[in-house]
Length: 512
Length: 90
Image (tube, rainbow over all chains, first blue to last red):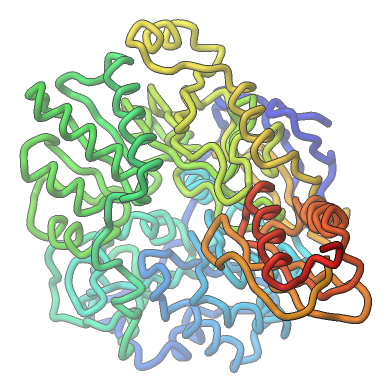
């Protein structure tokens, strides 16, 4: 069947639940009961601190076929996923499903655990590097489920993703299981992606390298949710956890695009008191924030909040009074970790509060402007950030389709082509974010407005911005780069791209 | 044109290509590209066209492509050939 994003979706996908095809970004309100979680009593005098990961795995009763979860605030410096899986492999437990919010290059040992049958399934919001490539080459029998950040929380809360044991990398934990991310040698800041795991998993094990006396303050994830605490030497490599600094691009094309995007925000009428926005941590996205900051200063505008994925740049805007509040699911650099620790207007939020479409209103719904990147964008404004031009998985939605759907103005910023690869294309390799939720595309060769938004198009033309048809941009890219050959795939589906509401927006096939 | 010695042109910078040419019995072209999947066919066609247009009948060509556009590929291949060859007409 063809879904509402124009994609051919099989009616049955082996190893995946019943297929609900994507039917439009605002068509599936969800229905049901928020999942239950297990009781467990800890009597007075009980001890939660265990001597080893092995002991924790034994105590929680992990068995073949179960699902274990991880969060990705340690990013490419994470030790916890590998540490836990190594121990589990030694214990002879098999057939596990890994529900990790993201998987990075540092998780390469996962490939070995897949080969020896310890891991037989993966669900994640973003997968990059060796594991992503192995998945695209068909290493797993069951298709991987790719979700958005908000979609993962939705799936957990709806009971579609049932976690038996959550392993939480905790930069600081007290002896009774209160956790936070802002202190300790592996401080990562917000623990936003781990909140739903802690709330709904049957059993929760915190793994820390900074065990402190009771009670910890402040508390992010509290003792009523945590079964056991294990102290290890290190939970991550600080160099991989946070980048030292995140910088604005110096590429002249990137700067031109960013400056045009800031002009689009102004011309759209959003540049006024109460403005809220999010940008990614990429160089061009940060440059948009920088141009926007200049405009806010010049017009003496105070924004309401910045959302993210927080970088030092947003922290500066908070300190300068250009933003009143930062709402934070993950800190990208040390400056934002420090700010979360010290500034009461910098607030840690869960990724459910951030982007879950089926709770009682996520923060993305309050967002004015979202600056998005794209690996590809097609003439229907569908965006791919999941697969590369070779069809191999190299990312995933993260918050992409959550923020596009929620925000009032979703702007994609990208070069028309990179290397010789056109970014504006006929048909994206994979749909991550449906075109109906994308308002504007800004490239160095012009600005394209989604045709459903005549009003916005008129505003931009009235402001003398270089508005062009998206087909013209595509033609220009193809003229320079040549029309790309089709990617060759095998029939087998290696991953299902779930839209944030749990419907299937696309499938990813094994590459030749 | 005849390839009489080894020569290179271009760089390994993004959006450029490095072309190496050397004498060889027969004609052999090796292409390595970051966009092989989508443009490999087209790149091979360009290399063969340039070789043909310069009347080359033997030589070894190694193209290391970093996403160069057509005009860049053509220019780099031509320069490498001119550096490696002598014009057998003159």
